[in-house]
Length: 284
Image: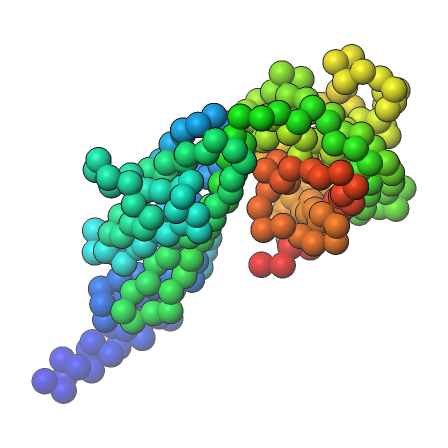
């Protein structure tokens, strides 16, 4: 018996030393993080009265590799919504405000007016601390805002030569996909200007011959299309000129001095907002 226990102890120590996946007594993998299988699902923007989106969650190990959950591990996954009136989960033919025992959920959004919600997915095994990931959902409803007035935009790049301030802009609504700025704009507001619209509008005016007097329909967006890269269905600013997200530094934004916990593309503007975009270190 002692010999058997010694061999087991040696095996566990060797697994730890060589960085092999560790299992707790509950038979579940210990993940330092969990994440969404599709990075575009961190932000979900909907239009109209009713929409749905299927989202999958995965484990994220210490090497930042995504791993599917086992059947046993799925039993310890729960889904909750911060707004059960507008955002629920489809379970068979039923709509629920929480869901358990699955790594994949169909999220159903109902909204006659603007509404938002945070969906939280938690992996909580008996032997480990819970880890969670969130998806932000913004429902635009049915009304449209064509422009928002008196927006101050500050761009703080890595080099002072590329910094600028554009005060008092009247930021118009424009379609990023139609203008050729992105190839997918599913996670961008379509019915009101967002903090992302403010950034792109300010960049094009500052760096090109376009002015605030130029009709938005006459913008060619040549500077933005040549120097800005936006990914994840429009929700993630990957690059502006040479300042590129490298997972150490990246483009981050604030509205009136506060950093929202969701994408700029899903953050509608209000009159007199101060929008700051800064290339800076991520705080993981």
